Every structure is written in C-alpha cells, then in structure tokens.
Amino acid sequence: MATKTEALQPRSRLSLFGGKGKEILLEGIYKANPVTKQVLGICIFLAVTNRVANSLVMGAALTFVTAMSNLFISTLRNVIPRRIRMIAQVAIIATFVIIIDQFFKGFYWQMSKQLGPYVALIITNCIVMGRAEAFAMQNPPLPSFLDGFANGIGYAIILLFIGTVRELIGSGTFLGITILSDSWYTKNLILLLAPGAFFVGGFLIWILETLNPSGDARDNKEAK
Amino acid sequence: MSDNEHKNVRIILFSIALGLVCSALLAGINLVTAPYRTSNEKAEEVRNILDALNVPVAADASQADLVATFDKQVKQTKLGNLDLYAYTPAGSGSVAGYAIPFTGAGLWGPVSGVIALQPDMETIRGVRFFKQEETPGLGGEISAEWFQKQFDGKKIVSDSGTPGFKVLKPEAAAGPNSVDGITGATMTSNRVETMLTNVAQDIFKEKSANGN
Image 1 (cartoon, chains in turn blue, purple):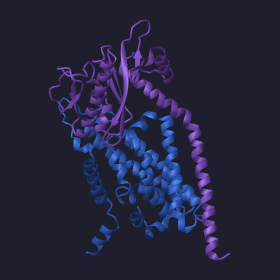
Image 2 (spheres, rainbow over the protein chains, first blue to last red; image 1 turned 90 degrees about the vertical axis):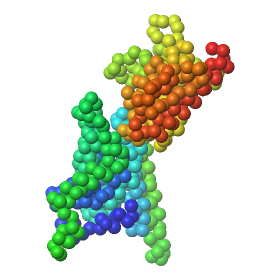
Image 3 (cartoon, rainbow over the protein chains, first blue to last red; image 1 turned 45 degrees about the horizontal axis):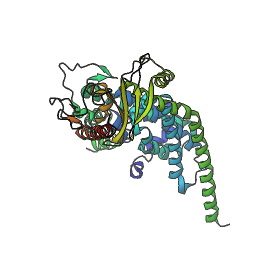
Image 4 (cartoon, rainbow over the protein chains, first blue to last red; image 1 turned 180 degrees about the vertical axis):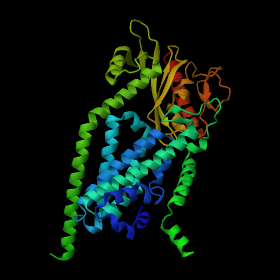
C-alpha cells in the first residue's frame, strides 16, 4: 500500500481543489478514477464483480467508508502527530469498516452472507488510505468528504460496469434474472474467475485511456 | 521537558484519545446491532434445518415464524454421540425425518451445513450448505438451489452398503449416492465429498452401535 500512495502525491492539477466541488467530483469519478486511472482497490474488485448485486453493495460500502474516513481524518489533520499518522488513519478507517460490516450483518443479512469476508477487507483497499494520505491530510473537512464520496462513486460505477459484463457473460444473468437462456447460451466461466475481471477491466481502461489519456501518455504524445 | 519528550507525550496522548473514540464508536454499533445479528444467525440456522427437512413453511415467513415452527415441530435428540434434530409433523405422532448438522473444511474456510434423512437414516430428505466462504459464483454455488436439490432422494450408502458419498465430475452418470460437482470448482467439490462421507460414516457407525 505504501508504494502505491506515492503515485497519489498531488500533482499540480490537484491544487485546483480549494473548495471546488464540481472539480473534486469530476476528478474522483472520471478524470482520476481510482480503478481506471490509478488502478487501486483491485483486490476487492477482482473478487466481487462477478455479480451485479455484490458490486452495487460493495460500491456503496466503499463510498461510505471513504467519505466518512476522509471527513474524520481531515478534521483531525492538524492534530494527528506526523510520525503516527498512518496508524491513526488505519485506526479510523478500520472503525468505519467494522461499522458498515456490523450494519450489514444486523440489517442486510443475506447480502452480508454473499459478500463474505470482502466487506471487512475494505480496510486493505488502497483507495481509502490513498485518499486519506493524498487529500484528507491536506484539505479541509468538507472538500475531503466530497473527495472521498466522489472516489467511492467512481469506484462503484466501474464495479457496476464490470459486474454487469461479467455476470451477463459468465452466468447469463443480470441481478439474478436470466437474460441469456441456458438452452442456447454456453456460460463463459472464465469471466467468473479473477482473470475475467482483468480482461474486462483491461478493455475498459483501454477505452477510457483512448478517450481521456492520462498524464504520461499525453506528455509522450506532445513530446513526439 | 525537551522538544522530543514533548512530542512523545503528545503522540501517546493522541493515541489514547483516538483509541477511546474509536472503541466508543465500535461499542456503540455493536450494542445497536447485536440483537439483530444474533437473531439473524439463529434464524439462519433454523431456516436451513427446516429447509433440509423439507418442513412446509410460508415463503414469506418472518424470522419469528420460523423459530416458532421450529420449536413446535422439531426436537433436539441424540443418537449415540451424534446430535440430531427430529422432525414430527404437526398432527402426526411419528418422526418423519432427522436433521444432522455438520461442518468441514472448504477451500477457503469452514463450511457448515445440515443433512436431513428419512427415518431409515439412509435416504436423504435434503442437504443445505450455509456458512461458507467458497469462491462466489464457483465453489459458492454449493449454496445454490440447483446443487442442493440434487441430493433429494439420494442415499448416504452405496449399493453395496458402504457408507459414503461422491461428488462426481459434472454430468457424470450419478448413482444412488452421488451428485454432479460444480464446473470450475473441483477443489470445493472434493471437499464437499469428504465432508459428506465423514458425516455418512458417523451416522452409519452410531446407527449400528445403537442397533437402530
């Protein structure tokens, strides 16, 4: 996780943030999308996107955790001693992850059963700590909350897209409703396995990179 | 106090304060959700036992309904060292089936399930796997209806009378004590086979030991 946060150090572009809500939202959801641009949170993404319903709930849970932990960490940013800031961040993140996990176990039992250990594993999702380090530690609480929310939604949208493709091709269903009938459609099981997420994710990143090249690719083009 | 000591004191004070706040939040959420979680877990077990025994319950039965039905018609008994649940349908005097809970190792974690047998202790009324952490969409399919349904009416002994159960390759001809495995989940299928064979042997052992 530590090496990945380096890539998240604010670039000059990020200095635009000072209270600009629209800009923050656009960054998190599209321009600097955590999955397609930063390739973060891939562990959970591989695991849960073989069902649309699981993708939806995971997206919602991650949005809650990122937004809330960003808000808290940003509020405390001037009090957290520099030397233990990572431990403090993890403690705050873990608290919110346990809260959402217990909430699911109490009120959405079926869903919690299906997601198994993955809700608890949000703690290890690089997006959450990445946003805490890169944004919440340097910005006031409200923009930080918005930044966490935007990144969560950006993650959720990608999960939803990949989940739709994987479930449709892998199981022939969408949200559990049969779309491609067994009688003529042979399920492509590899889409349900982790490699399936890499294939679909790879194609998606390719498309998005073509539409909206990231820094390096853009600079290379200009240099030529 | 030197600068450095001052810093250390601040770090310790901050850690204590943060720890207290986080614990308070966690204790709070635990307190709020605990009753719901316990009743969910209880109802989940009850639902699976009733399901395996094929006890008729309304599709939209609430958790309280399930527990009430369970308490009325199912009694916990013992056969030797084996815990089992005897099902006596309402308005009938005789036991219509037994449910035996079991656990075993799955691919990623423990699997708990329940197997329900006819009073002959050989023919399966139903099998349910709950509490499992197998790969969703692959091994996780052991909790799916199509997989569990295959067990109905099968036996836990082979034609020659040896206790055991087989989970074969998908679409292999299934005998009286075998079902189709799951494509792409050979490891889970093998472990389920071991689990069921163990429980079959236990039942067989207790049955012959207790002359039942």
